[in-house]
Length: 71
Image 1 (cartoon, rainbow, N blue to C red):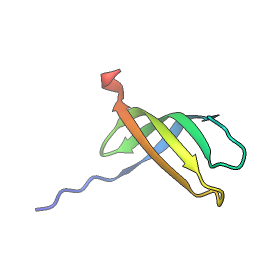
Image 2 (image 1 turned 120 degrees about the vertical axis):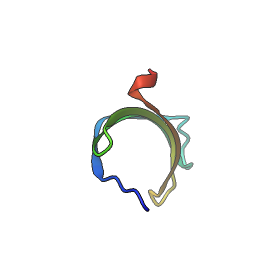
Image 3 (image 1 turned 180 degrees about the vertical axis):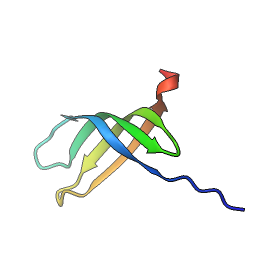
């Protein structure tokens, strides 16, 4: 028997700031954000991302998220 949940999310806040900028090198940013999930699962989470943008604007990132209950 499989279980299935459906829903969606909205980004409530997004604050992305560059750091360690150097001419001719990929762009590094930090993003602090908040998403609200709706549907079968309801939650608000905050998360932080470390992002790098290559010269062709492709972005790689890693991040951590935490549910509101844990703040």
